[in-house]
Amino acid sequence: MKHGVVAGYSISFKAITSRSKGAIALTAREGLDQVESDAIWDEHGNDIILMNNVAHLKILTLPHLRVGRPLTNRQREALEWVGDGKTTQDIAMLMGLTGATVEKHLRLAQDVLSVETTAQAVLKAAFQNQMFIVDPI
Image 1 (tube, rainbow, N blue to C red):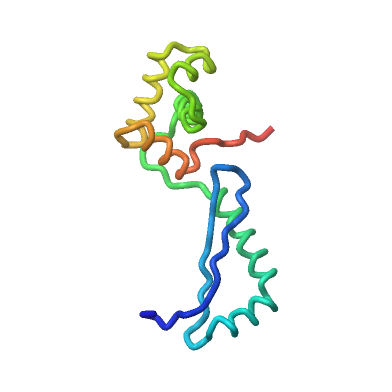
Image 2 (spheres, helix red, strand yellow):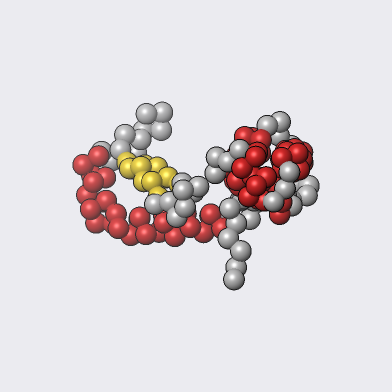
């Protein structure tokens, strides 16, 4: 109410993967009530959704500024498996490594990302679009 906003919409975007989500709040200008906002939505809602979906998809592909070095392929892969809920021993088997080597990759990933835990590393790497990268064919 501080800015006179009393009407509008919240839109969530269809996720293209289970790891990408997005939403936007559209607020009506000061003085419009929800009935007037509904009339605008009825006329332009499909166009608004289309424009926001295109913007959302573009934002997902933007690179993030990285300070320092990027994750190695092995660090990224280990973090991706953690993000999928695998244990260290599961990851070792999947990657053909020892558990100690997997732990080393996870520890080095934490150092690269300047975080204290593997969970924080998974979150930060995903946020920076450093994980779950689809390689072009």
